[in-house]
Image (cartoon, rainbow, N blue to C red; front, side):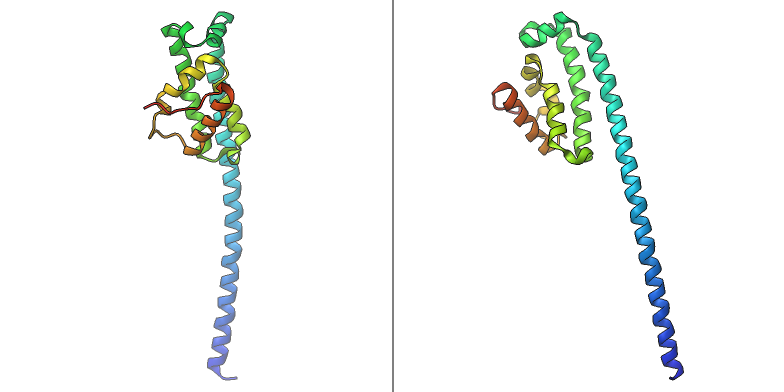
Amino acid sequence: MELIEIAQLVTGIATLIVASVLIWQMFIQKRTLDIAHRDADSSISLDAISHRANLNMWFSDKCDQEFIDKLNNGLDSLNNKDKEIITTWLMPSITILNTEYRLGRLDRSPFYYKASIRRFLRYKAFQEIFPSMPFMKPGTALHPNLVSLIKEVYLDISGKKFELSS
């Protein structure tokens, strides 16, 4: 065996070792990124839950039986302050839900998002005001698939086809 052949063999073995080390590093990096992704998802989930809980506590503080009855009767029974309360609750609530959907929280489980949308539409007044909310205008940042879920739940609850306001 000549010197050039030995040099080529050593170079080939060295290349194989370097490639093996790089492949091993890629596996370690993938594992690290998977862990970081799970941590980020957990952080997003906890933040969303915290914000939603704070919004819901604020809203429940505004609710008494008279207000709930007004919500069940529809928008015509609400005064301007009442309308402001429900829009103040709906706007950040739907923004949180949209952000969760956009980021792929819970793998965009239709069950989770439909349950949340049902909460938004549980009162007649919410069903009446929801289509006219600023976030429901065409061209807003709402994820198109989330809009489809909203339309589906709206039809299921109200029996009416959801039309986006202009």
